[in-house]
Image 1 (tube, helix red, strand yellow):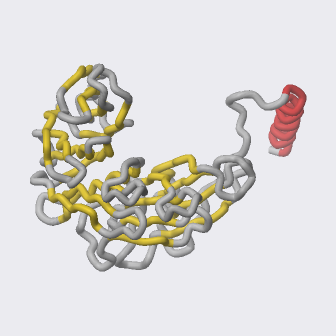
Image 2: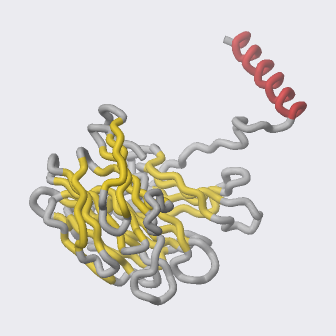
Length: 300
């Protein structure tokens, strides 16, 4: 055992010396950290559910990192060395407790218009709320949701890209899912400054998927806990203006530059189970192209 340790130490020393001699190259580990325990719970699921880049928070001119984990943390790490700048827990006891469950339930934007980017998260489990966190220190700027209910449905997606109420600040689109009976199953738009509701549109389907903001409003994936699967397009007031039938659960929707030459931005999506990738127009949901990658589950 001692001999094995000696070999490992010598090997590590040799590798370290080699890196120092040649300098860092792409692919080298610059730093790595362990997700910390959350002292509020014995459940230490340290999976990183969502990982986003945030413009420099601590003044070292290096962009920083936001990580949302299964043990209820949202953590801001220094991009240069992985030191924790701040952390926020969404474990509040037996009632209002839940973590970020979906990769796109985190977005980065300056929601309070102070020149520093902030972090907006949406939780699942027993929390099911939206929190706007001050990018500088992790304090709560505002929250949206009911802290005493536990069956409103996961926040599956948060997108901040366009201004819906004309105040010059991009607002927060939210996909709130539910269950066959109960839950919100709605597309919701929140004022980025204070979290007040700009529109709340219940979907006729019991489950919602990803949501995307577009220059004409947005689109949200919806399903019935199975087929039919569809994408509902809405205007800047949240009113339904088009529908697109998909072959699977809409795991991912992204706005992309114009690809069909009509002058408007388009949408690319990923349908689960069938592995379908499709491009549709952003203003009417008309199909531009579709491809199948074979059977799959989730993805981005």
